[in-house]
Length: 232
Image: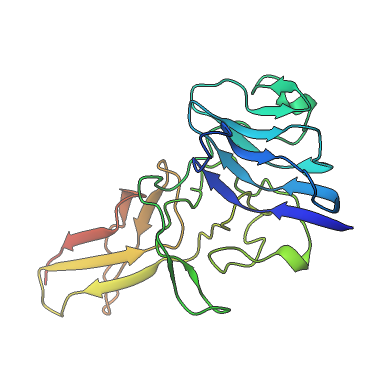
């Protein structure tokens, strides 16, 4: 007999209409002794349920995000329905809030990068953002399962992220555009991952002669360019 493990996936509105759920467990002749569902984001639409386990075949489940816009039944297990109000009685570590994906309207269509090195989806639409309840909220499942769809080893933060991705908030890559004597300089930067919208940037700078300039502060996190006029 075998153990089937469903670990660290992101299911986004990909249900079969006749099943009326994102995931349906319907074992007829499968020869498995255990079925584990852990660290998954299961994002249904308003007309479907996240998970149906007709006859209670799931033997271990934890740290999953069950999200259904508008509310309603999230899980149907062995004939018992669970909503956001009581799904914790079935799965104590379940989360039910919006997982705050990067951009569900920009879904990946393939992969870019080198397999085994930096391969990742060609869009971050299904990645989580820094404010996501799924961030650092997963169970640590061991080195055998610590890879992610975007080639980031888990954990990159305080804990494993729930879902297929592992978000990183690394140091920004910075490009400075300007020449000595220019009256205006431009600074561009990009950051892997996403910052909370309340975060701001601060830029401190000076001159080779030691002249002190006032720092540029209060730049909102979504902004990726700054320009500053100075006396040449």
